[in-house]
Length: 239
Image 1 (cartoon, rainbow, N blue to C red):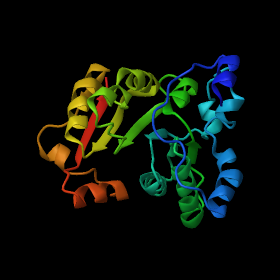
Image 2: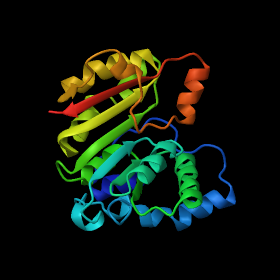
Image 3: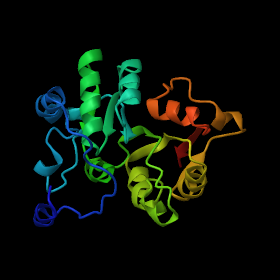
Image 4: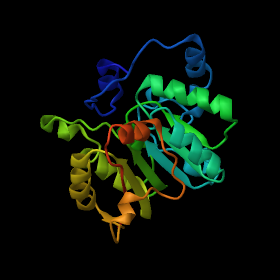
């Protein structure tokens, strides 16, 4: 949606930082986006087709299943893994990078079919607009864009602009997992997430050094380990 269309629709205008497009997509990837993506919209219609920001009918759209959200799923490794591991849970993946969305759709075709994945190909804040309060049972933030320059730290997900609406849509007691290999991202996470109404569940160092039992190591994590960076696995609960 262009800035003019967004303004005319009455939808909130937001700055978005980061890449939307990468290298040119191949024909198969274009086909995935054209043929598969429209039917995977969390609300049944695209973001552009819901300018009034009508809330999603969760029971109708997700067949009464528990619903989880992954914020920034990259190429979809973790998203597809979790959907396969938990077939009785519906998982909404949010990813604004078109190339990542296309990669995930290709993975779903090769490893599916999946009937418990929805995809919001855009800013997670726009998804939060249409999710009812207390409707999400678990959320994941895996290796988010680190925005390493200090002047860009406000662009990170772990700020009130993102955490406040996330807190609103999570159920009481819902789990929020954060994985990152960037020490300063850990620092900001530990400062901002509890301030937004979450409790850190770690009782000792092993709780953030060891991944979750259902974790799958993604290519981002494998690159971090090769380059000598230490993954951190932080688990919070909405209070």
